[in-house]
Image (cartoon, rainbow, N blue to C red):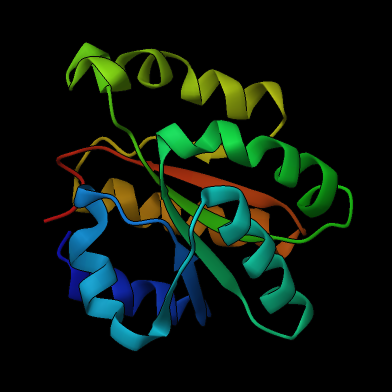
Length: 159
């Protein structure tokens, strides 16, 4: 899916606040968002910013690399999940199926299991446009219940 289409779909689902930590796989969507994207110094900080935005009436989306997911788990469990602060996390799936630089392989092997261990609903789209559409719709339903939702973005998911 191209960045302009993803932005349109996110906006169509009501997402109106975007923050995160850049990753090369997210460059297109970050560029498409322009001034609507608020960069953060770390992924856990981005989650805190998103929580504040939600409490201020926004519907947040956090963009991050899966290497920052470990930083984020404490914030997710001690802030977002305890206080029912929903958000969408678009998390790049570095190290998917053992393909990437060596520093991404361990997190790539375990990131889905990590979010599942903490009860965070998630989806790994196959890479096709329709599968990402389905993941976004599912995310919208879970977020409406006050839950965070994680969509893992593989290298072939975005153009």
